[in-house]
Length: 223
Image (cartoon, rainbow, N blue to C red; front, side, top):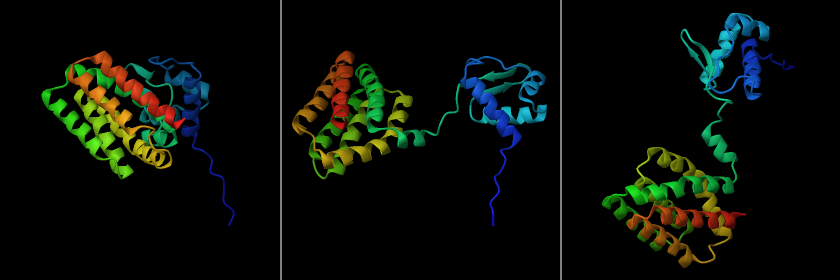
C-alpha cells in the first residue's frame, strides 16, 4: 500500500506564515497585528482560516486576542516544552543556568533565612558530609543541600526552576563522578561550609560569591 503525503491544513500554513513574520521582527513584542480583512488578504486565506491560525498561535502563547482591541504579539517564538529543552541541553549549559539561579538564591537566603531555614541547611550539610558512598547517595545529599539554600531564599520561582533541573542534573552528576571523582572531596565540602557560614552571618555578597565559585569549578570539571 502506497502512503500518501498529507497536505498541511490551510490554517496551520497560515499560522506558520504569521510566526515567520513575527520571528523576522515585522511585529515587535506587544504590537497589534493588522485587522482581519487586511491580514487575511496578505496571507491569501479567508477570515475563518485566519481566525483558526490566530487561535493556534494564541494556544502556543505567541498571540493574544483581546475583545474589542485586536490581536497582540505576546511572544516572539513558540516556547518549547521545558523537559525537551533540558534533555537536549549540555550539562555545562545546565550548570551555567544553576550559577545564575543559585548565586542569586544564596544572596537572598543570606538576607531572608529564618532560624528554621538555617537549621535545615546545616542538617543538609551534615548529611552531605556523611554520604560519601555510594555515589548516588552522595549526589542526592548534595542536591538536598543546594535545594535547602534555595528554599531559604523564599522565592517560589527559583525553587521551581531548580526542581526542574534536578532529574537532568542528578543523572549527569552520577555519571561524571563514576568516571572522574572529585579531585578533593574535603576541599569541595569546605566550599559548602563557607557558603553556609556566609548565609548564617547574613552576608549576601559572600554567599553569592561562594556559590558562584563552587558551581563554576563544577562546570570546569565537565569541560
